[in-house]
Structures are given as structure tokens and as C-alpha cells.
Length: 351
Image 1 (cartoon, helix red, strand yellow):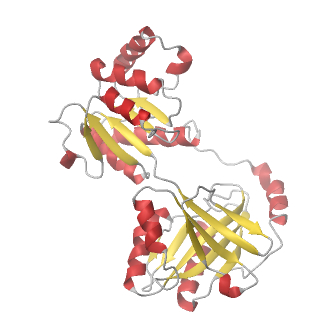
Image 2 (image 1 turned 45 degrees about the vertical axis):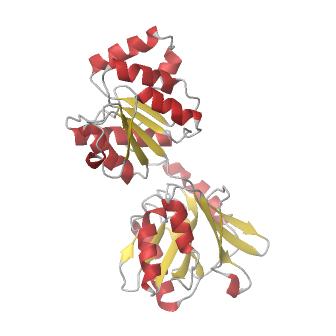
């Protein structure tokens, strides 16, 4: 839902009713994320599409029906093999509800917390013997997993929105501007740090926080304030050793970090590694550094380099290698069938 917050707010403020359909549980191979949602506004416009195949069609129809009828319904949707994200088939549960200021009066609070990068969790009743309770929402700032929770007399969908991860870019240049665009598309909060005030011009980096400070000093400040964690990415675009070596020395000593990359040529990489070895870093520690940063896609321009670094950032975040995607294991079918049979006893209208 995070990607359609602005669209939801627009519908909320319009005074009209749309339909919101959310995938609350999946069974089967693939990676259709739980929490994926589609909004249909009062004019029939669709927001949040991108799931693909019959699953997207089913979620869309559920949202459209909720907008038209005002019904709050948990749908079970079978997914045939070969669907996007479901190589061996499976099924999904979709909760559809009308969406308006009357149906979800608390939503502006949710949107405000997401925009402010504060943790917020929404509990939604998606099944209950009392139909008047279905669709009720509870808002909390407590940390939870995004999942469907089955209670003795109720099923709750828990949608948890953590603060957006941070990407720290050191070096204010054309590559930094291009990488800011890519990182924001991936949901990162971007900060650009450079000690040169004449280069660190906020107007050149829309959407990013721009800080004028020595890179290693700023990183130490963030670390001491507890603002670096396992989701944080760091990209070093300042190739001058007097900037990058003190910075990388601090970064390589951080206990938690999602990604650490330093751009540049292979000769710059060799010099960088030699300097860091001389500073006492062993091969295990140096292996944490992606240098030169970015997947090998033949990037030449600043924009292409930004795409290559963003791709490597995604791979590091997901624990993948960045190799070409392969087809799933076709031998999974039996496991999927057994999982589907154990999916639960409750059934509602299937689209």
C-alpha cells in the first residue's frame, strides 16, 4: 500500500468512495508480496497495478466490486501454474473493502506517519462471524510482521510500514544526482554529503537531503546517533583518497550495514584496496565492500552507472547474486498442492 498512499489520500479527500483490494496471504511458488494492493477510484481509474496475470485481474475485480457495492469481502483466488510469480500455481487470499473518509477515517494518520518515516502498523479485520466488525481498522506504532493472523474468532491482516531505508551518497556530482532518482524509485530516503559547499547544491539534487560536512565525520555522527542499521546503504562517489579512505575506514567498522559500494575504475579500485589493507583491514572485511560499485552491465554514462549501482543494491538487499533470472523448480508442484490443501478451512467467494 505504501506505493499508492498519495492516491489513497486523494480519494479520501474527494469525499467519494473507491475500492481497495489487498493480497493478504499467498500459497505457492514465487514472490507476489503480501500487502500488494490495487485501488480503484470512483471514476474507475486504477492505481497500484503491476502484479500481472490472472492475480492482478482478480484483485482489480475485487476492488471494483467493493467500490460499487460497499461490501467487505475476503476472496480466495486459485492461481494456475505459469502465472507471474507462481511458476507452479497456488492461491491467494484477497481482502476487498470500500475506501473513503467514512470507511477509513484514520487513514490520514497512517499517511502522515509513513511520510514522516515513522513506524506505523494497521490491523484490519478481514474475517469475523459478526459482519459489522469486518473492515474495522486499528492503528499502532508497534513493530509487527506484515502477515495474516488467524485468531479463534477473527482473522486480522497486519500491514506494517517501517521507516524507509536510507541511502547515503558521498560525493555531490552527476552520478549522485542520477542515483538519487533511482534510489527514490526504490523507496530509499537519500542523503548526499560532500565537504565542498559549492558542489553540495540542494537544487541540483531534488528529493535528497544535502549535507555539507567531511564524509567520515558525518558518518561517525550518524553512527553515534544510532541512525545506521542493517537496511542502510552507503555509496562512495568521491574518488579522492583523502575523502574516501577515511570514510571507508569508518564504514567498514560499522557492525550493521545493508550495502557498501565505492565507484571508480579498476585502477582506482586497486589503489583503494591497497590503501585499506595498509590500514589494517583483512580480506574478510574488505569483501563487504562492493568495488567498483555496480553490476557489470557495460554502464558508461552517469545514468547507466546509477542503474548498475541500484541493481547491485537490490541484489545485496535480497541476498541474490545479480545473475540472470532462472525458471523455478518444476518439481515444486506436489509441495504446492499439499500447502494449498493445508491453506485453511475458511472459504469465501472466489472471483
